Length: 116
Image (cartoon, rainbow, N blue to C red; front, side, top):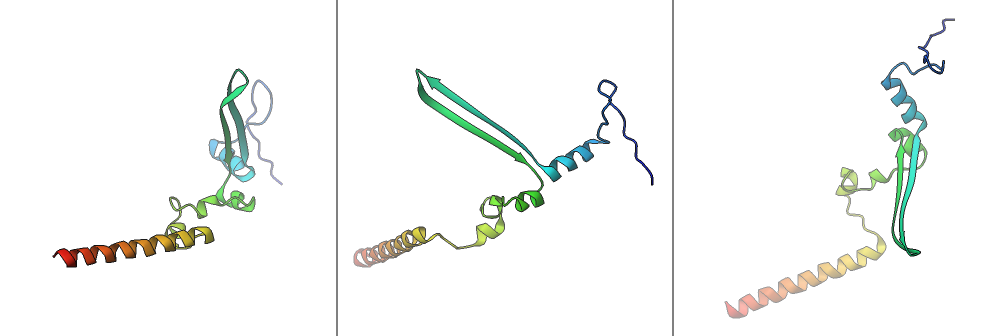
């Protein structure tokens, strides 16, 4: 059995991480959350509230935690960008817009035929 020695901090006597890569690996494996709120009030009237939440984890750890929003974001995922799936409420509106565009194109063609 071999024991690996780590350098000690002169001030506290605690072991230090071997390198930045080791520290980064530990943070990504376990995760770290930084949270903060900024609130601006004037005479007890809330003018502005900013909630900041930062989660630093590996993709595997995030998915293990149930966080996978990037898989559905069209700006970040080609799968999300390529899918034509639309929510039920949006599909009716989309169909109405398609029908309206077809009607307008037919009206335009009719006007061009009458005046051309």
